[in-house]
Length: 109
Image 1 (cartoon, rainbow, N blue to C red):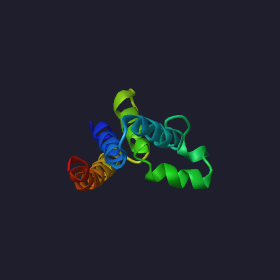
Image 2: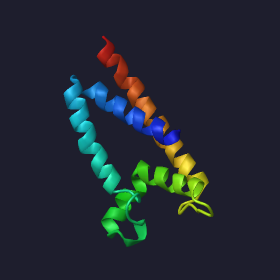
Image 3: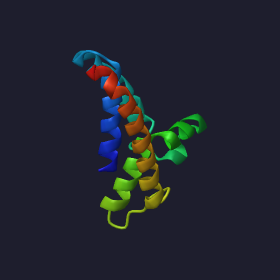
Image 4: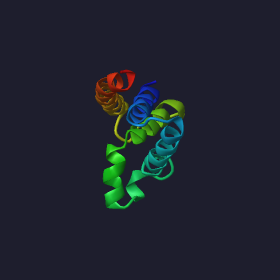
């Protein structure tokens, strides 16, 4: 649920900044695909180049994937710890929600 909230607020920020639905979908895909490839969804962080490891550690999708793996796999464990995953996702979601709350009145006027 935290991952969904995080990326929903991310999408709302994009929607608040852009005026047409086509632009929102295009920019959303341009931003989402690099987030996916710069996470641990495909490859473990340990085998990534150092510069990509830095990006992966600030990428919220990394923490979503890490937490889901820990919860869904039998005997699964979280690389950074399930508590860390939850705290990081909560912090990022709250930060994005504050940004979205500030931008939203701008488009309603």
